[in-house]
Amino acid sequence: MLHANPGDRAQWEAVIPGLHGLGEVLAIDLPDHGLAADAASVDPDDTVAHVRDVVRELAPRPVIVAGTSFGAYIAARLLESPPEHVTGAVLASGFASLSEAQAVAYRQLADDLESGALALPEFSALATGLFLGPDEAPAGVRSGVEGWLRSLPLARLARGLRRSAACARPDRHVQRLARPATLLHGRADVAMPLVGAEALARLGPTRLEVLDTSSHLLPQTHPERCVRALRALLG
Image 1 (cartoon, one colour):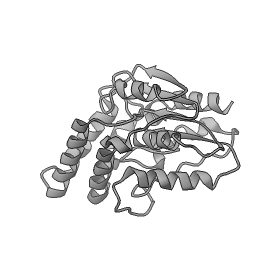
Image 2 (cartoon, rainbow, N blue to C red):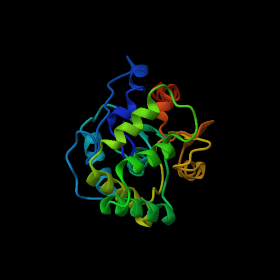
Image 3 (tube, rainbow, N blue to C red):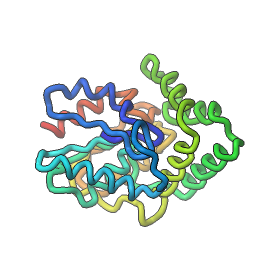
Image 4 (cartoon, rainbow, N blue to C red):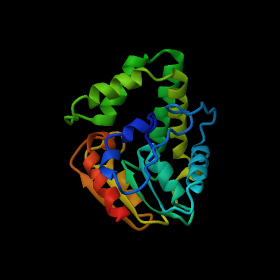
């Protein structure tokens, strides 16, 4: 299970109980996130390589990869040329690439955070609004997301924004999906419009499920839909 950026493995906590008895569940902190070590690189290829190493260590057991947002992008990159024991993926709020306009916005946010032009509480409120939209989130989710964002190290936030911006590079776009994937996406997602998931769905054997929500953090706001998608693949 791969989290968003910014994010950590706790984003999948509400999903894990619904998978009880179906196998081992491994939710990880990607480099430069959560309890993982700092990482100076802002190249998403280095994150892909890290996840590939983790997945290889799980062989020969069959593996299904789940990712949300940036984590879904990383999972999709893994599916371009997946190890043989990877059998499929669930990609929530995913994308094949970012536009240059999105990349410019991310780099500007990173610059503003580092210069002090944008205070961390302001960024936290802005990001929470993008991640959750105007929908009613489950109790505690909105305040939890905003409070957690306020607590993140500024340097990690800035690197994370630049890491996301690098996904706009043509040589970092997802080229194909070589395993079956279920895509979950909010119809009114502001952080990643539905067109991003539709482009990803055209790259391989996929099933796109569109949810009537503006949430970008589906494992936290719609865990039951994530559980259903994972159970279907596991079955």
